[in-house]
Length: 78
Image (spheres, rainbow, N blue to C red):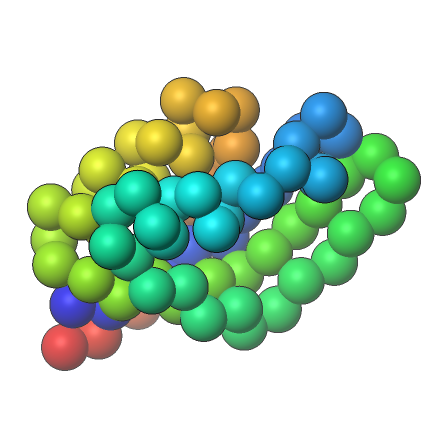
């Protein structure tokens, strides 16, 4: 299953390996589609691939870390 999400990182998480940690911990494969980072905020559009449970756990992990997660229109691609 694939899902496309837009992530917005607060300033304190810009330099943290949040995506890497999520990918390793929940067996989710991220594919960066677009990214923009400034000194105060980071924005990224990712395509995430994995089974449904892993994707949901990964998204929950990101939200708990403080990342704003939005589903992108037409998010599920099978």
